[in-house]
Image (cartoon, rainbow, N blue to C red; front, top):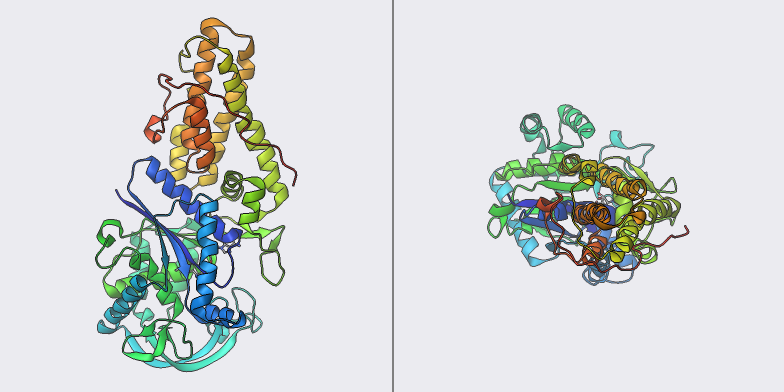
Amino acid sequence: MPYYITTPIYYVNDKPHIGHAYTTIVADVIARWQRLKNEEVFFLTGTDEHGEKIEKAAFAAGTTPAVFVDSIVGKYTELWKILDISNDDFIRTTEERHIAVVKSFVKQLIKGGDIYKGEYEGWYCTPDETFFTKLQLVDGKCPECGRPVKRLKEESYFFRLSKYQGALLRFYENNAGFLAPEFRAREITNRVRNGLNDISITRKNVGWGIPFPGDESHTIYVWVDALLNYISALGWPDGIFARFWPANVHMVGKEINWFHSVIWPAMLFSAGIEPPKKVFAHGWWTVEGKKMSKSVGNAIDPKVIAERYGRDSLRYFMIREMPLGDDGDFSEKALAARINGELVDDLGNLVYRALTLAERFGGSISGTAELEKSLDLEGIMKCIEGLDLSGALEKVWSFIRASNRYINEKEAWKLSGEDFGNALYNLVEALRVISILIKPFMPGTSESIRKQLGIQAEGLDACRFKEFKGRIVKGPYLFEKVKA
Ligand code: ME8
């Protein structure tokens, strides 16, 4: 079955921070896992380039939006290379292929009678590109980010979101996995039950956007434009749309869940398109206990961290430290603790010890599978399919620790002959399986273990102990101890 996974498309008003890196790493791990299962995967990420926020950032930088967005987008594509992200496509909302789809989709909504002209009166948070009613404000400020909002009163075109209340509630009920994680389902369902207002979908005074078909004095609201990336990248209604839609999962941060779980499926209903199978709203990273923000100046640059500690270490840390769906805290101290413990002492040490012993042995590495019983393969698979990525790593690590214990308990360094061959067989087979299981999380480390074992790359179906056919060439330590 083809598998389609997406990240949000990120605003190009500023360079990426670890929050952006996190969602993209999560989606990359899932995409790579599906490929290991031999599924056909389409993994999409990209950038959200229109709207008032970008327009303002460009003018503040003394340039035009078109020049400005081109100058930022490269920071994203560069970061995805640094972090070994395996996306199959990268969509920019300023691309012609996207603009054409947005226009024809909106035309379809107009034809269907779901758009009408009116006047918007209310409040707007430009950094979040979100409309709020007075009642929603907290102390007169944006309820999402706490920043000042501005009053808007302008002619606007509206989408009949209210019409889809019943259809949405029925859809949630019949598709239990759509709203994820489970604890967020109630939040969304309750809000939808309380009633939906029609939403403004054009802006009269924002020039940097896609002209609204039929009245070019308006541009399309940036969120309507942005959500459509998920189908424009597939070439809707043609291209590879039929092959990959509906998406298996839109991975997003919790603050944009409403747009993805309510507005997006309603837009799709209106156009007669099936909604995605799942919207997963993950939690937020704080930095040393504080919310990351430009004004505090505590945003962490993932490029700097990857260069200092290694990309696989960063990938491992982010997935292991913050269970998907929960909030978590980023600190170099916590990162160093995991590197020194789980990567150096557990994994790095196991590879080095096992291969040092194997190098010493001249005979045939064969025997009976003893260590395999410490591997909870089914549990690992279940975790990943249920998107408990941290739980999956925990289980892989308990196998790594069991393998280290095996060396000690057997006193493998004292063995000789067949007994030594048998212990080594168990260790190298354990390493082979570990190298497959960690591949989605730490592709470079997996490759390095595979090369040291002298074996071919294999898929998930090779995670059972079998005959060992490698030619061992031990390399240097995989990881080094670090100081935070
Ligand atoms: O919202 N912790 O773009 P954006 C974890 N363009 N994840 C975080 C995070 C944090 N502290 N901060 C950001 C937009 N993220 C829109 C999306 S999609 C059709 C349009 C991640 O640049 C998380 O995935 O503000 C969040 O949803 C996203 O970055 C917001 O990125």
